[in-house]
Structure formats: structure tokens, C-alpha cells
Image (cartoon, rainbow, N blue to C red; front, side):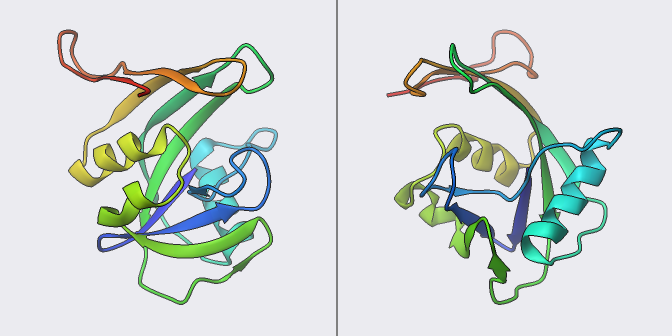
Length: 155
């Protein structure tokens, strides 16, 4: 997944397809055979937006598990890009969303916390656990030292 940022705004995809249909998410996709995650980030960004990025920065990892067919390991990258009109995307509609508006738009359950870490420049490894209805049960940050208050519960 690639968070495309210009200043305090993110170019997010309002997804037309599952998972997370109708929610705003970064662009991204699955690794191809023998593909490095950073190369997939560059390729997926170009395929979904037509935007060429160079040297995206790895911000963290998100592991999502559920007792149903919803289990993902996501490398989350950040790419700063110049402002441009949102290009066409066959995966949904791309829109610029200001950081301070993120709480006002529908996001995947894990993402608001991730954007806060990205905004602060903090690396992360999140373990997110969902129930069979894909409701977020817990989200634990595992990279920081034990004893830090980095646990987030759905509420």
C-alpha cells in the first residue's frame, strides 16, 4: 500500500470493490512472483494512478487477521508527490483528503491510527485482529518498546 501525500493532504482511493468498498484507502495491491514489496509499491501506484513514484519510504507493516478469508500482510509506504488533479482509476475514485479531515470520511478500521503514525514520522508494526464479521477487535503496535501505550481497541 502506498500513501500518496502532498503537504498535509493524501491522495486516497474511494474503493469501488471489496474489501473496503466505499471507504478511502491508499492505492496498492498484491505482490507478483519474485517481486520486492518496494517494487510492487512503485508498480501498483503507476498502474492505479498513472503516477510514477521514486524511492517510496517504508513506514511500517500492518498484519490483519480474521477467522474468515481476510488475512493480509501489508507493507505501508509513503511517497510525497506534487499536487495534481486526481487521475482516473479503475479501482474507484481518487480524491485529495486533508489530514485534519480523515476522521470525517469512511476509512478502513485500521487506517486513522496509521495516518497519525505517518504524520508523526513514526515507524510501526501493527497487528490487527478482526472477528468473523470483519469488525476490528484490537490493534496492537508491536515495534515500540514494551510498556509503551500503543494498544488501540475498537470502540
